Length: 182
Image 1 (cartoon, rainbow, N blue to C red):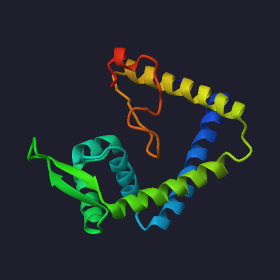
Image 2 (image 1 turned 60 degrees about the vertical axis):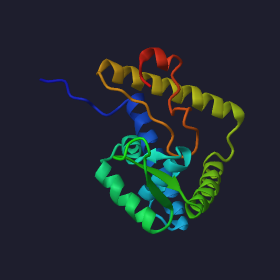
Image 3 (image 1 turned 90 degrees about the vertical axis):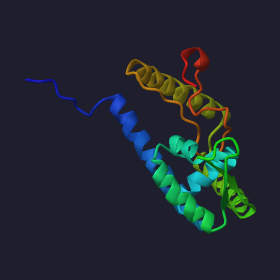
């Protein structure tokens, strides 16, 4: 008889909790982001543009792992609503550079308040040691996934969707440059 994966044990339990946690967090954030008046997909795009001024449509599509056509439709809606403006790239007329408007910046500021409040509520009662342990565990998981991906011939280089900085990847790897994964 062929070996069959049985979903039991500590690995499966940890994954079940992790998936439940991410779904719950995503649901809360999605519900709260509606306060801004834009949809979550548009919100992700706006936050990315905020962190990456002058991002191209192709850059945004790559980061969110969707087609450029999908991004084009969303950008058109954001532009019509006055949250962004597009300008032709001076160096290459094939590309549009996306800039966030003051109206878009207002959404970003409102979003930062929403996300900060959500994080504070999520981690209510946590101590510094709890955060230190969580960070170490998540770093180990990310490093394992990056090692798996490298072994499989894939490249993973994700940045945080909410907050963080452009030069601070979601899963810090100690010698990322020597691995050629940037």
